[in-house]
Image (cartoon, rainbow, N blue to C red; front, side):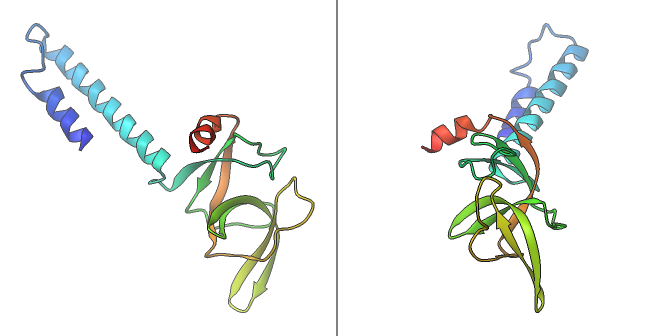
Length: 152
């Protein structure tokens, strides 16, 4: 909706200064459309509507690899996971970001045993493929502090 309103304003005759020539109006319109498209992309990324999403890390269980306040980029479509990968999964109504330390085949499914790098023991229970949200593909240090502060 915002995109359509901006397009309407950018191309309406009332908003365009009559002193501008044809080329400068086209350049202005192109930059306006690019800006609105970039804004829509950023909003979709932050809200998790894309196949990758940012997640702020709130605990130190993955220290030193991932620290409190870091933002990890989680790929929701990357289902090719193996031992050593860091994944985001659901556990008791919360999401957890831990490393896979082993996997086991059970009848038709594979289950994973996970552990935080800073933790002494493995997590209780198994992580099934249905529990997995995605695979961590990138980490950006310290930019998640604002999000953590807003949620506190």
